[in-house]
Image (cartoon, rainbow, N blue to C red):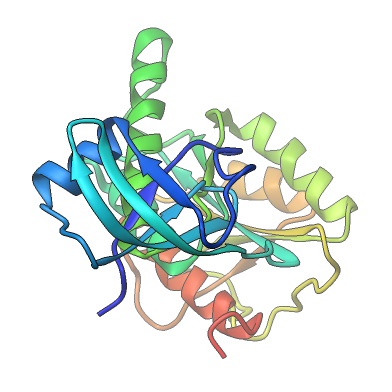
Length: 254
């Protein structure tokens, strides 16, 4: 069984080396020592969410947290092509279900989209609280998936701002793929970028779908409409399925 993963702040491991010790304190330390009752000798990983993984074993558990014997400090490089899920806001927490699964699949970033047909609206205090929930969701999912990198969570975009993002990504050599049930091109056949530093945007609409005017605005900006297969998927499943296909095509799962 793989080792459990706990989160530390970026930069935490700057002075940590193999053969030394590390104190896992705060909420994560309490979770490891009190909730999970980790005991001496057990393997534990601590990640900084930006690709650095501390590999250790529990030396002791105390009031200050869990002391680890450091076996190694590894740096996991970012993939050349970033997979970015642009998820339309959806009711019933279906958008959070989507980003949770997308994180487990390997999304590098998630972006909330205030689509025209989104029933849920992020405004004012609700926007800040909703984004905070998304941040908590991707952190928990990254730990579940034993990832060293936690996906970035962008600020909510309306369709105009999303079109600008699409234009910038395509202009930089990336691609933007809009999941649409009436598209002719299958996602398995679309050309993908390979250059380091490029992005592949995966745009998923809300329960009511993407409107014709919205689709036209995005394709005019350089996006491509693609289909996943013969069936229509929910907004909570379309993104993770698309990301799984793209991750395989990009060689992440080989």
